[in-house]
Length: 298
Image 1 (tube, helix red, strand yellow):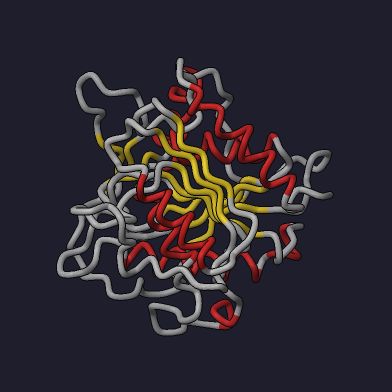
Image 2: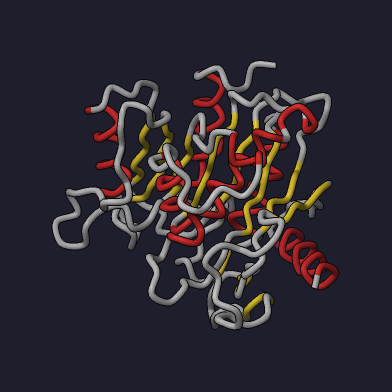
């Protein structure tokens, strides 16, 4: 599986002009049983075929053994900042290269260590769509902080970045850090699961479907929520109101330093790949924001 996935990554990156990068370390999130898992509920982990006419991406499915993969920033560029990356995929699959490895490569280019979260998909029966992934994200944040010294990162400059469903997961992690949603496992869970900042790119499921004016119950923004950067296209099938409403909620709670970009066109699912629309300039804007906020100081 690892060799097959590596070959797919090389092929996908070549197609979009990127170099395939490999993690220096991969860690299982759970040392024993994965919490609340039902044995045999999902099949064997494997990439799923692309839909006819869709862009070529690695669509990783049936994840039941979640991990984090470390992509350290080059030593000559490293700022000490790190970002946990949450690919999207509707909580059904993970867009593992488009919104994962390619993003870690970009983060490395600006001196940030990328930590790719392979969280559980698809949605588990009789559970909220984000319940299992949130457990994985909370656990991942604790592990990263516990490894900060060994990995050469600042435990006070660890952010989270997510796309689409991964944006919802990032938002849920940002707003649900007071209490773990699983029984504590070991001393790793003594470390805070609160991200120091968030980057939400076309985040999904943030608002109600009817009015698109109310944040969903799991997105409960408070004064303790970290500042966020948002990028969304107005013609996205996922309503940009989600980004707008969370931005406004942060302002109402007095959280300073947020940045919101709503572009007129661009659709959904572009990741970092080029297009004719200015929405794909979001990485430069996000990099400027991180620098302005002081997270990229060396």
